Image (cartoon, rainbow, N blue to C red):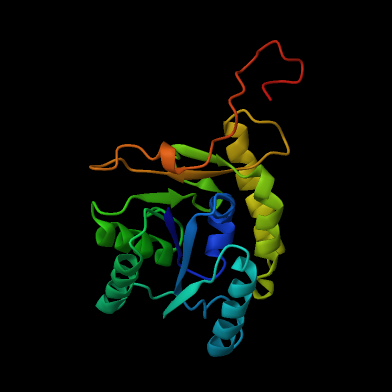
Length: 229
């Protein structure tokens, strides 16, 4: 099966999608990693030098999953040129994935939202899409949870490769996010889950057979002395 993950910036795939992709890698699926913008506004140093550094960081961070493709669209200005949509559409049509993973169109960053809408428009009814969690889950209502506990340390190591971004802040963020999503499934502390949303439409009524398993079901027990977990 061919999986395409498209992040707006260098480090987005690591923060929001890495766990699911690592699990797909263990299944020996073919994975394409696409970075839409150059990330040149993600710091205070010279934008051109920063873009080069961030590209190297991304290659190092994702090397265990695949070799990323950089579209080098302008950071912070995605959607300012009609050709940006053509770049997204062309890469999708070139790869023809069985599943696309990208940002939600209600995310906090304008580049994330624009990219999400571009991918939805370019994919039409030909390629199914799942949308990753928003930062801290705000306004995001998932309908798929993926247990990433067994690959969580790999995810943390990947995030830490992004030295230009003060990555420890993102490590703490994903620990909170993925622990909380696991807790929503009534899983114990020390387990982690990534959350995704899928909008059902013809001909893609359900994707559960394409995805790794959710956290194991632990029924609520009010008599449990340790609480609901």
